[in-house]
Length: 329
Image (cartoon, rainbow, N blue to C red; front, side, top):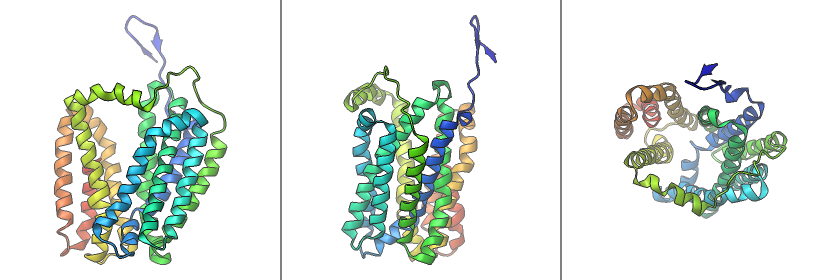
């Protein structure tokens, strides 16, 4: 128990993990992330199998992100009108249907359409789940809850690629999509059961998406915030571009990696993130964000540049992926 100067004793807030409702939400998160990880190492080469260019393969990832962003703007409205449980379940069912459709695609346009449909469902799922977390966890514990939620998702994404590569090796590149879709149905059942009841504060102030954007506008005049946004953009570009989009194609066509080896390489990326996340927060608090950010970006740049130079020593691809993951984290 802590005592505030000149005030009453301050009760220490327990860990969010002691809250059964929060643990249930983490179970949903891990299940979804594990399935998502299954398709990461196979999606680029699966798209390549339709005989399209590298630029066209990028379209598969772009359309998913575009629809996810667009529907993210209205996800809160869906939660307000129908509830977070409805939003989560609807989102999971949409992504499940889109994943089955992706695995059954007979042409590249069908694959693009399926991924776009999945982006919309992903936005609804995230909006509903985050709303329930906010309603479940005390504000004083929200920082820990956010970190634990991210870690749970990272665990799933870290494990998934290895199994996705193994599944693709023995059952074909379309198989991970079917496994992913089935896993989402399992997550839907979990959500249906554990999200009973509506954790909604009827007196809470609600803002429209436009009002929320206006409220956030002053942040764009803060240089440190803009720098943080830029660093975040670079990190996600590295993850979605050189490593997860072009990386599997390079590994298969230039390094002659099997599907399971590609999956293992993507898992190395997540391992690097986990290892650094364990110390990055403490280092940032002790030495400052800038002192941590600069070497992290430098490490990422060097590791990504070296990834394209490993034809003579393919085994170095794996430690370099760990380095990229660590730099991005």
